[in-house]
Length: 403
Image (cartoon, rainbow, N blue to C red; front, side, top):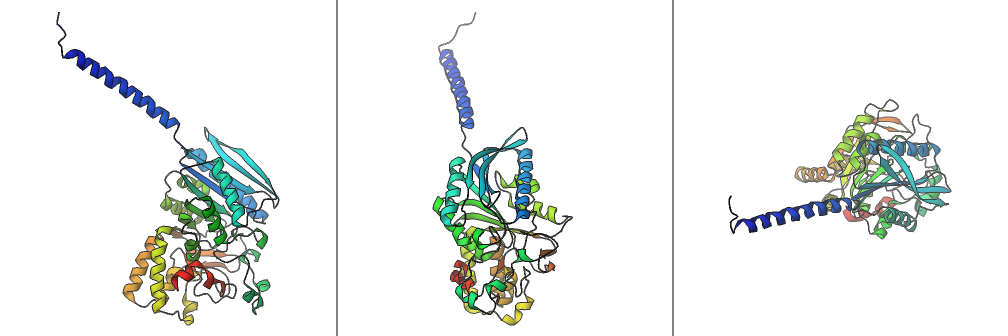
């Protein structure tokens, strides 16, 4: 019979100690895993659009998002929805999913909700944040969109020969297809971009991304106004069909680590073959690059003045007369004649708009399909001579930063 040496007992004791410690470590990790906090809350904000067709589209958007959630599940993530079902009723609820089946857990019902002031929107955001606290937040906004254009025109425009009452918004045209004001079709339900930026600032949140499921929101003026409110902006520089974002396809890329390229690819895959109207444009703006873009634009503006005789040569991105939104990259290409400076600008613009996609044409309710010959993914109203914007555009933060 062999004898235990004086060295074996400490070795066995040490081995047991390691085994026990490792077991506690695994148990500890399991407990930590269970207690892992909600990593990301995606907030779908769908205020009353004063448009029954668009309200129905909102319901379809939610249904499509649920298909995406049912497919991938929610891994330490939450999705909260605020939707106005009429001008006097709204609901805040969480979409939960178990075994691929989604349901709505009502958090709060609202009567005569107000959502057009910074205070009102901040209140709704705070309720969302309280119901679904997370390490990061993202926001999806549905409704009509009109870029940076203010809700209430200035007195100067009211007194001009082209009065506000004679201006026809895109949703007022009897186009063949419906397209999607951030908010509704009347000032009572519309919200200024400056108001949204103020509201988000009041909550102390900086969004990972804001996805505008609205027309005309991929605008350099809009992006610059929201540069401190979000890291990224996902939006269309043109009118977007009433169907909106194809969430059943792209929804899975909006959770976890956001895959912006896949969102653009999924958008194109859907709209390039969309039976009703195969038109669509989408772009992603990296807001961390906007300060550098503005600085470079200021240098260009200090050296060059746009020749309005070139207006008809610019890529228009709307159906208004005269146009309100022009392709930003094309505008600068016509403005700046210094090859090296223009190259520097183009490189900066590629960093600012890292992902973009478009069909060969975009659709407007006023003019139908319009060809896209030049596409940078973002618009500007700087060269516009439309009386609707000619005075107000000089009051934007972007204009102040670049002139």
